[in-house]
Image 1 (cartoon, rainbow, N blue to C red):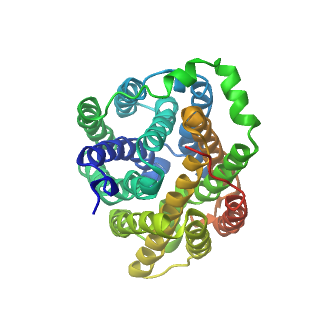
Image 2 (image 1 turned 45 degrees about the vertical axis):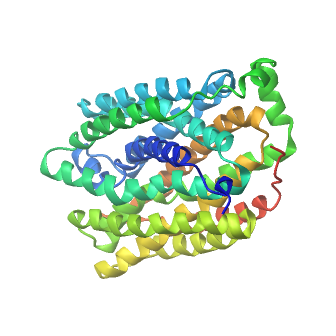
Length: 402
């Protein structure tokens, strides 16, 4: 086999360290959700305030990501990643030192300000470094971060929170950031190939160029719809499982462990299938399955633990799997000279859609006198409908020439 047909060892090393960046900032976001029952009890808050605690991260990421999109292509991608990731690591220490709901809310907003931009840079780097023919598999590696965060990070974090305090997971995450930051410093090459084209235009001109392109506008709408459908449901899985399905808080790590392990295999499989059978075809199949998974989980009654695990694992697998061909579609829809700006704008769109979905769902979801969450099934129906809309939008996205 021609060596050019295989990723180089260094290429895989870079993908792994980029996955590490994704793991840490996804874990920072995910830690909060399985701790939902504890936070709601500890701070004496309801679903709406808990939804705000989750969504403030995404709203902050959306605002800062939008501003960053005007300038992100004007700097070396490695330098940008190192600076932003260091600032992100510092916010985890702020979260760990929070003494009240208001302080934790402010720390989450600051974390979102850096975390959202990190994701845009990571995907821009993958788009710049990896050829089109291997991009689906490469994105599968990077996007395995959700599975790893769920499989390893969340159970470890929950165990630390149980044995010590809820602050312990954030200290653990700060240590992880130091390790990954060192990997970025040593393994990621300097990336300046996009600078000449980027600096030949003013930031506002580049932004207008992105938004004037009909194909990219369709990609933004597709991205927003996809993330809206996911984050209307995801943040409330743990509270619903505990309050309505009968899962004990001590059993939540098991749900994430099993779901994460299966998801890790799923995203790798979907990445390969995306390269073999095409992005749109694979996305359609997995997205339809994710809609069924949403409807099943959000209408789940009290069931034995093994059925609760199966339902949550099915949901996690399909939700994560559909993002692989989705991101392949979006990274292929934009030319390299605009990729950084597009991905930053896209990250902002995703974060705003996620925050809107989470906070909107928190206004719909209530709590009965018995302590159970209400109207979660209604949220699931809306999320499934948005998923079907994303399938239609995916078919209207076209690939740009590299």
